[in-house]
Each structure stands twice: as C-alpha cells, then as structure tokens.
Image (tube, rainbow, N blue to C red; front, side):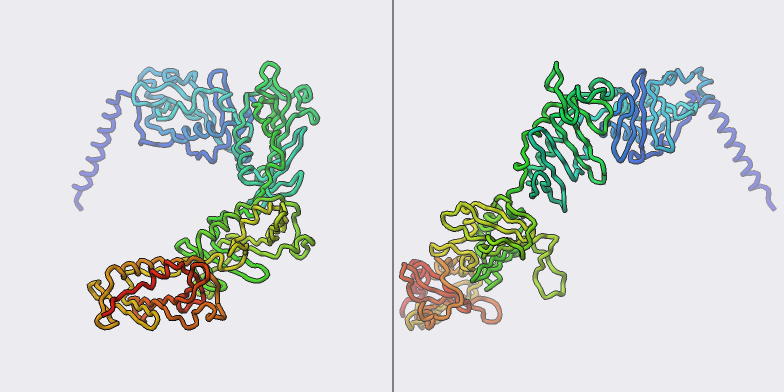
Length: 616
C-alpha cells in the first residue's frame, strides 16, 4: 500500500485551512457576503393577513377580513387596498445582500445605533394569524444603495435592497380608503336605495339585472352600469368627531332623519354594506355626515352621493323588447298565418334563405329587420305569463318572430346548425300595428312578458311589397342579384331569339370565335358588355315563387334565352329565360332550374339579348 496519495490529500487540507485563517484575519469590512437576492421574508402577499407600521408617534395597524383590508389603529375604517398592496410587495421583494454580525461590529467599534437601528427609523410587523416577523428599519448605507435593518430578535445587521418609498412615510390617513364603497362593489348582486322621495331595489339574477321594487321588470344594463360608476366615484372626506357616534339623530343619521340610505349586498356575503347619509356640515355644506356599516367611526361623504335621489326606479327599466345584439344574431325565422321564412347567416357574413327555398337573402333587408327588432322599446305591462295563459288581447298576436345565435353541432350529426340555449334564442309574438292605433302588443315567450310598443316602431319590422306591408313573405327578403358569374369562367355563350341561334366560344388565348351561324363575325364590344351584365344581373323586383302557370308570364315556352357555358366538369351552364312584359316597362324572366320569376327592366333586357354575331 502506498502512502503518497494520503499524504498529498492531507497537505491540501492543511493549506486550505491556512488560507481561510489568513483570509479571516485580513478582512477589513467586518461584513460577511451572502448570495445575491436572498429573500428576507418567506411570505407571499396573498398570505399576509396582519401588518403594523410605526414611525415616531405615528402607528398604523391593519388586518385582512374576508379578503378586504381594514384599519384597526388609529381608527376603525376600511383600508386603502392599493396602498397596502404596494407596501406588501415592497416587503416580500426585500433582498439580503450582506450581514454584519456582533463580532465584526465589535472589531470595528460599531453598535446597532451606528446603523440607525437604536432607535429604528421605522418598525414593521407583518405576518399571519399564527406567525409574524418584525423588521426594524435603519439608515441608508453610504455605498451600494442598501438599507440597514434587523429581523425579529436577531443581533445581525442586514444590508438589503428595498423600496423604502413604498413603505414610508407613515401617514395614518394615507392608509384609509378614501372611497365610500369598497372595490369589491363590482361583485355586488343586490342594491337598495332609499330616500324620502322614493326607493328602488335591484338584484342580479342569471347574469341579468332586474328591478324588484317598487315593481318587477328587467333593468337596463347600461343604466345600472352608470349607477355603479357613480357609487365607485364617491369619496370620503375623513372621519368626523374622531370616534363612534354618540347621537345619530343629532347628525341626521337616525332611521327617520336620514336623507339617504344605500345598501349593497356582495356576492357570498349575508349582511349588506350600508351607507346612511345625514346632515351637512354647518361650515362646509359640500360634505355630509355619514355612517358606514363596516366602519365604527362617523365619516364625511361628498354631497355628490345625493345624486342617487334623482334616479327614479322607472328610469332604470330596460325598455328594449329584445336585448340581443343584432350583429351577433345568425338565425331568423318569421311566421304568420299564411307563410314562413327562415334565414341563416353564412360563414362569409351574408344571409341565406333556407326555407321555403334556398336562395341568397338581401343583407340590407335582413339587417334593417334585425335593427328594427333590436330597437323596439316598450312598456312591460305584464310579467310571468305562460303562453297557455295569455290574456284575450294576445289573440291579435298572429305573427311570430324568432332570432337566435347559432352554434355548430358536433361532427357526424345530420343537422347543419344547433340552436343552443346557452348561446341564446328569443321568440316573440307580434300584433299587427294597425292604422290609427298608437300602440301594439309584443309577447316575449322566454320572459313571459307582454310589452306595449309604439305602433310606428313596430311597423318598421314589416317589409313592403307592391305597396303592401308583409311579414313572413320570402319575396321581401330575397336578394335581387339573379346572376353573378365570373367572366373568366364563361367559355361559351348561346343567344336564342325568335328561332335564330348565335353561339360564340372562348379559345385558350381568351379570344372569341363564332360557332353559329357559320361565317358570322363577333360584334365588336358585345361580349364584354354581356359578360359585365352576367356578373351582376339585378332584378327590378321578384314577382313570385314556385309559379303554377308559366304561360301567364310567357315563360312556358320562352322564345328568348341566353345560355352561359361555364368551365369545369359536368357541362355546367346557366340559362336566362326571357318572357313577356309585365305592363310596367319590365319583362318577366327566370333562371332555368329555379322556381323564381323576377322582373328585369326593359333596358336591361334589351342589353342582355343584344346580338353577338353579325349575319354572314
């Protein structure tokens, strides 16, 4: 066995010890370095429930109850959550950079007072119900942007980085929440406002605000939101009297003397937050005495809170019959005694009639209808009525309108859409807005409510055809664009007129040649003009659907037709059939294969059947 490795290791240990001894002796600062960013406290802001801060004669103590911070000293009041949040963030971000222990302080002839810790600049206690830490805050270090402090009963002086400006100075009034209502008011589910001139009570149910008193009705969400903004903006002017109320009546805060009382119920709380407003200060009427239920001392509130007295319950009523956003709707169904029409929004944002036929809908007509429905406002005259128990005046509600937000159905199902109750579906029964009547009735099946609506407003829901109002006639909603071919797809055109047939064909180079009559020549400019019409052929009006007597329109055996042969497999083509005149400077027409008769203006018809080929 060789002793050389052992002797070598022993020599290394001795050298290391000598190096440590020499290093310790040559240390001048008396400071033991620590790893950078070593946390002073091992707490999270969310876990802190108690804190106190003392400087000189000023002392602030706060506790967290039910998720909210309250001052307990020097006064009982709601604390400024933002101010405390900044303080806690500053505390948990304190990072130890170095430590000066008692031995090293003694070698340098220094005491804790040398670091500003006897007495300390400030004393902080922070923690939970079961544990707390005390921090004594001393002077700023001359170098290194550090602050001297000590933790709990330890004798070490710690040099640490910290945001002192987020902790000091200690102003007790600066820790008091200046708002009359806490930030948690955003979680309110019920509010009650009482004053000598009246009262109202609102409650949140299924995400919708309703007026519960003095009547039951849906509340206007925008107006309720403005009410919350008023409450959130109200400020306090400090404590009055410095203690609890000795005599509520003398300050106008008695049950019968109060000028205003606001009660707010937060979600998950059984007891409301109650603000009672009394008399104005004699020397400053801009401020009113107030009692706030979560504060023991009487306070002062701005007189702006009296603006709540000017809000009548009727002004909070939602007068909209349909509270759906018109732009979000994607399904529309109209029914009356004689007909039904169903329309659905396409993926491109347009609208398609899907029943009783499949045909593009006029987006402007549908948009105007949805806008009219969304704009209906009325007086809710009855609520909670089931359809089976509708009163006799509802017999006039012969028209029915359904709007919905569609959601896709799972793959593998036969249906193309599914009306989801979560997305929303609203059905209304409408009475005809007869001439001379000032109001008509609308019944909401979902709400079980009857509304009295101005007849002029309800009349905007009806469309007009041939100077007559219609409701569920698909003709009123069909798009007037009968043909929208892409000129690049047209490869062949045939014009048949009074026994004469003209056919032209597009070559690979884009040029047009004559197939018939033999020897004919293409009329200059005729084909581009025809293709421009075929790309945007608009009807003057749509006459009828599924006609049973084509002969009356001279479309049973039309003598004039224009056929466009399109590129692609299967010999796809579109043919426009031209019939007889309508007696009003128009011509009846059809697209072959569609049971829709429309009218073209005479000038458009003449341009459509203009000769393409000159005679040979």
